[in-house]
Image (tube, rainbow, N blue to C red):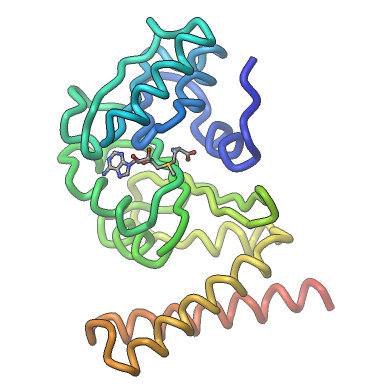
Length: 224
Ligand SMILES: C[S@@+](CC[C@H](N)C(=O)[O-])C[C@H]1O[C@@H](n2cnc3c(N)ncnc32)[C@H](O)[C@@H]1O
């Protein structure tokens, strides 16, 4: 049996089971191998933009004896992956890259998404919000000492707000995660003041900063 890291285990938990799944940017292929070993999905696919990581995913699948249960595609996002999928997993990439991959896929509005951004959560959230997704569940997991955000998204009408799910669940990692995000937003704003970023980001970053301040105030109340 394959042992997933806390970050990937959380992605697998949100992916759940049933129907079809594709893991975009699979690299080592641990997630599709885990899905195949546990018989969680009827159709499992994995894609990567680079041949090296895709070969490594194929190797993992062979090693665990599930090479024939996963379809592999060399593809930029979902561009060369045929068909549609009920669940799309994208983990371990920057939020901006993820937003680009999802927005280029014509059938994405009908899919359930499991997303684990490494950075630029704001860019991904803005895309999901604008594309009509809501945040169904959000988890924070410590992995190698760092907090990671893992989210489940599906079509809906109330706007995309992972912080709501995390605040309602009083996630103890929300404070450290929001602190880290706040430092990043402050750095970006400082860069912008030196004229290093496009002007239309200014308002978005300021809104994000004030949202993070509200979240931090809330988490401090729990600790009091
Ligand atoms: C850091 S690894 C993450 C691997 C795995 N998903 C995880 O979370 O552990 C990122 C992988 O995404 C792939 N990647 C980057 N951009 C991509 C794109 N546009 N389409 C498909 N794969 C991409 C990279 O080649 C790399 O193998």
